[in-house]
Amino acid sequence: MKVKTGLDFLIQDKALQNKFKGNVALLCHNASIDSNFNHAVLKFKEIFGKRFVKIFGPQHGFSTDVQDNMVETNHTIHPYFNIPVYSLYSETRIPTDEMLENIDHFFVDLQDVGCRIYTYIYTLTLLLEKCVGKDIQVVVLDRPNPINGIDIEGNILESEFKSFVGLHPIPVRHGMTIGEVALMHQNLWAKEKINLEIIKMHHWRREMFFEDTKLPWILPSPNLARAESAYTFPATVLFEGTQLSEGRGTSQPLEIVGHPKIKPFSFYETHLSNSIKKSKLEGFVLRPITFLPTFQKHDNTICGGFQIHITNKKIFKPWRVGQFLLRELYHYLGNDFEWKEPPYEYNYTQKPIDIINGTDKLRHWVENNESIDKLDSFEKLDDYKEQLNEVKMY
Image 1 (cartoon, rainbow, N blue to C red):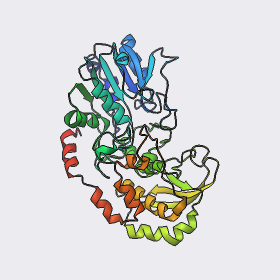
Image 2 (image 1 turned 135 degrees about the horizontal axis):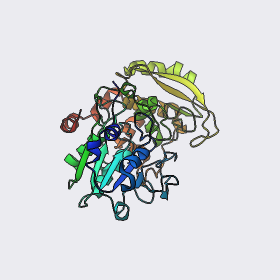
Image 3 (image 1 turned 90 degrees about the vertical axis):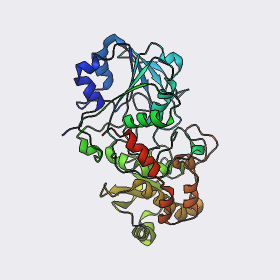
Image 4 (image 1 turned 60 degrees about the vertical axis):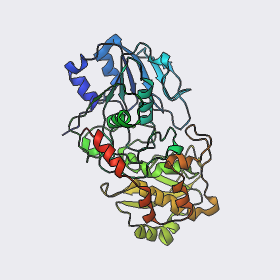
């Protein structure tokens, strides 16, 4: 049975619509569509008419057309809808008092990807914090976690490595829907609670991967053009902290990694295939490839590397595979390997790999060529699992 998102439910339930009497704003992006491919803004215009007064966009913009981190989007008036569009990835990532004027109900409809290293959940929680003491109701239209709501993986963020790709103490693969992130924020991290409502999905089950929902996949950011990219994202996003390409500027971004100095076939045959067997990591194949990025890292330079093909999503562990591949390529490339230097997501002092990882210990694990088994010591998840059980809605 097809999943019905929070947006679908709002569109179809007149009684629910009638609960919202005042002026309405909507935080949304390219993937904010209903199950019939209609954009949320079109439906909000139909439902709320002139009471729909403001649009907000997250990183990558309302149109989801801006490529890279720290590339900001301007505020504008939408040329068709004639409504102000405010960017929450501009000179500010927190809505200002002026932006929030004349709003009674602030709706949030964002497709998250289930990974800590993705900014939309922080755009949400910063909004929740900004609404403290204001007469504004925040309404989250819930959407699926595309990499399921059962599997949890990775280390918990350490507080000294907070950034806009990690504000809260959650693991890399957090297992929450965006609505559950809002609830966890209110339960655990908020100094003061606000008027929050979650409009739940119908028919979503925690074990579902995105294709199980039967919903259309619309890219939530420019380099996640298909759901398969969301499954590899917790692995390949680590390479944003290096000078290796994570495939931006190709047709398979965030599914491949590479570097001009990698000889993929010989490295795979002489070392990597045996290393994979010893690691006991399963559910994937690394396919040796060459590719040509057309922009960003190593643009217009042929790179050797690997594509991650998932053969069994139920046993594939993207965080572990990413750490494993990072370790192997670090020692293979030697002096040709470089960690990316600051700034990264508005952090100007710490190494990008450390704020991506939420710790510097994993960088040392890579550099010291330590065993896969030691990754177990980074995953102290018992407390988090208890916290997650308190906010589960499905």
